[in-house]
Image (tube, rainbow, N blue to C red; front, side, top):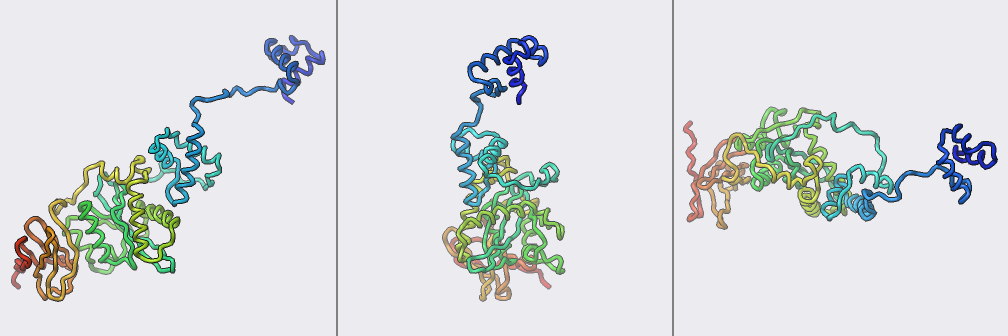
Length: 387
């Protein structure tokens, strides 16, 4: 029984006067007369303490926004996309709605039963974060596994810009080889410029140093002036950004129809790459998309080597006749490298006047060719040193 009920019952039963009740229970006579008036109008239930909460709050989140928050949560989750409070706020702003704070969005989701309780995580402030200061300062690379509808294991090779989290390349292979690493790296470099450094694990497709040699990727990078960095064995946290990225990729793929072929999977990866770069805010980028963060800052360049805008890279093999073909300005040209080099893996570096062909297994210069747009055949002008 509440205090107010006890007081009013003692007053109406004449056990206490208003003055005596006020003195004993430390309530002003004015308040007691108000309680008596409420009692006469509505009975004992009306003397219970009333909430002082206002009937309306002009700063409350509008019902329309609350409804849209729950809709976005379900829509994004169904597509395998990030559906956290910060991402929902980003989508609300793009739709022209005033986004409440992340805490308010979380409370709205919790009230709607859309939050799954999880164990308390390690606070982000306890992590020591390393991030490149510029785009193209460091590219991270790794591959992960995915299965087709028939159970075939496919490896997905990714290149990620460390500064902006921009997904430079995302390709499906069966399996990933050293040639795939070189080819995808050069393809990304031809579009986005050559990075100053790379960061990978110690997989054989990236380094052969533990086998006592060097692979094509290790020969390629010094030619371009790119510094190669490898994480410590057994310490994947060094490549934490791309390891975390794989979770995002697989969560999205899990919500798509299971691909039946490698080409079908590649189409899904192309769709994901566009969405991830252009339509998904990233918390580490202050909620800018990776594409916005990648273009917002001048790009880093290799410490040595030629400016990326001044040359073109071509990864190829010398054919059985000791030649390779190169298309320039819509016209096909044939480069004579030499029959002795037939079958070798090569990197052709073409600038405005010259094409230099380098053997990727040894970094040896095999041939040099003067660019002559009027001729179909460009002979080897390189004179190797006399033995």
